[in-house]
Length: 383
Image (cartoon, rainbow, N blue to C red):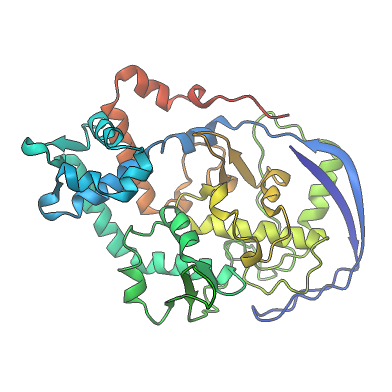
């Protein structure tokens, strides 16, 4: 549940262009609390979009592991020795039970080896071809992600958390990072146990947000965000007025230096929304789990409790509370349905949908129908 705040900002100046320059706003600001609460409302279509990928990440890890071995098969001991598989499934028995559950993808060979079915191997080959064809696009997404951060760097662990959502291959460290040494470098700062991925080259052409690209005119001073609400969402008049005024405030590019903004203002809040709006656009499915960005506060120049922005702006973001986690979904990319709009769809998304379809085909008919239904993930609304 989120509070709806109304701040009247007067005398707002214009934003200076250029990523290296801080936006300058001369403003007299007054903050007033509006006694209206925005309630989280379940969106069955977007819950279904997230739920369709239940277990897909785990299945894909095993697919990737098996297909990378000679002859596209792996022995049980080698499979069970994989640390990531143990982390995903908890035990050797868990791995074997999972493989047996999805016989449309995995085949048990004589001698205890595991291979891929012909259909799974064909789809995996198409996926690899897609990764090769769209590698420049994936490199641009990774560069833009680093450009969103203040130090143009991220801990490698954070990049790993976002790897699946960005569409990067599992071996991106050994493949993409090594093939583009002019863009990326791995560094370990003195006194820091973490390895950081550092951006070496800034590109002004990449530093244009998706919201700016979609603007109807060249004037991007006060761009509004696309907003839509779940059916049945009641927005009181005070919040309608606040939203109208907030949308009319100056827009700060997520690639601009935010140091000139007062974090206590709605102009700064709009910049925070813009950063996550852009970050979600960088993901292939226009969504990511909330915890994937929870450690990026200082790196993105955000205030305390910065992920509350998802609850304060339910017309821009949707928090899907399914599959035991919270997933932030960019509403505009789905157009009120459970499938990505064509203009937002990345080829990798279609391939992942085919994997999910093959997974559902392996389940008993009743469970398959339940997996597809919206009712499976019903939870009580939080009030």
